[in-house]
Image (tube, rainbow, N blue to C red; front, side):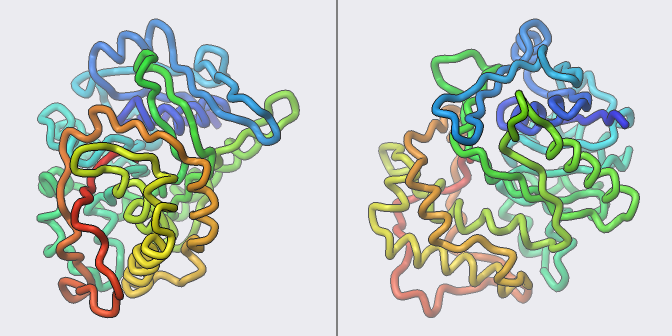
Length: 338
């Protein structure tokens, strides 16, 4: 059965969109008017390297099975879609037009799959024992999420690394690390059946008989998507210096023991929240993957960076850093694009 998926965000969201289009599903990307006009005219191009190939292949939306269109937030009726993908940065949802769209999504009770680095507040409310009222200050505007039923929101770990090449048009995305999206199930039998069907459709895609990387993997555990947190704290966020941006590879491998310590601290926090250690990714596997992550393009994604490492909210309030031999450097900032 063909599904209709609405994806808020045409940059990183175009990766998930392309995978769905390849599987024969229809996708609408929500973006600014200029970008929507470009996509409706020319489509999208997502570059992915297949296994054992030396160069990236370009996958053009106009050549794929599903249908793609793009709209501005005010032009969308979310009630006509089977799923909504949340693929923008958290601060962007405070924009009035996006906030109004989120209200319509919540009212329509369309199941939402977030591929944001920042878990939406309704998803955090699904974590047993987590005092979410103490976490609202971490959001640009926590009120944008207040109308959502937590059962209608799930989290997908944005593990694949991708960026818009700065010399290209905004309808082009380059995938630097083609790992899998890992999504927690909703907990509703019918919605989860549809989600697993989407995942299987994506897994079944072949190009000239070859498997195509970047799958959608569905997990029962609510904590599997949190495996991304240690990667973000160790690599992505430490790319942003006071006066420069450095590659993830350098951020991780410049001081491997410090990186291991930061990674382990965040993993321990996630386990304290309730995760099974088996839900998480070993540091050695992440460090190996980071060797291939060169230049990082943040672009306008850095327009709003916040310090959020002074306090980390836990099930019974702030969790301190006792037991950590060294503190992560204070000249880093977080809140930037994957």
